[in-house]
Length: 296
Image 1: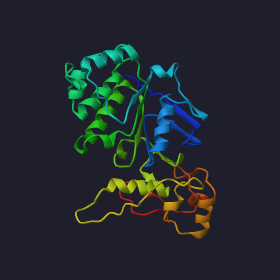
Image 2: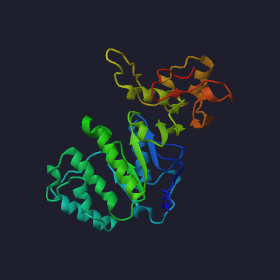
Image 3: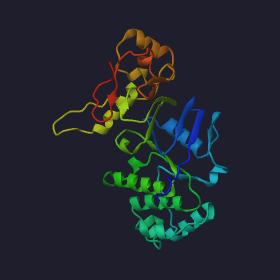
Image 4: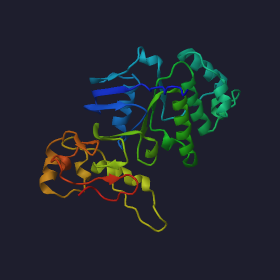
């Protein structure tokens, strides 16, 4: 008889806002990626999710009591100390509860080494070991990918996913681009403190989502030039992406500048863009894999 699958907890972010965010609402379940190129909103949302800071509006709802006991943070910057690995593991046990040092051996970490003597990948795996102490239910991984050497980034993500799957936790991972979007079961695209799109498949509709997806194309085929659009700081009025949007419809652009659109339902996605205000407008979408165009 097959064992019943263990359901991972669902964390609800409800109308959350602060100094850099406003009205953020989404459900985190499985592996949820929060994607965006502006750090201020991602950093603030991370603090809300880990209860490091209380939002000025809205709330984060957890389906378990005493959430601080069950939340683990994988920070953007690696741990660096003169402590031995064994001493760090004792700190994990003191803070989170009982665990097993055998996971250090599984991940190839010498418990007698000082943390400062570990490679960047070793330090990252040391951060992962906290998941195996106490009762981990919710993991927040800050935008750490760019802080790890290029050749180890995919492996670091794989290690994170394996650890999260083993402890049956829900994961929210922050990313600056769509380069590793294949790991995402749900994508929340954030810019200027607003959710611009929520997607569960590969299709993207918001012009900012499409612009962000171009970055993961890298250089394409040898000799092929891929143009990555410049995106600076978000606008603080209307749609935060309007200064960089390639749409040239004058009427729509006036609307984008003057007012923030609501979230429209577009083929299963939620899209905050005036392009999709009319039902059955037939504007199409963009695939993450090879999109080179905005919806037109």
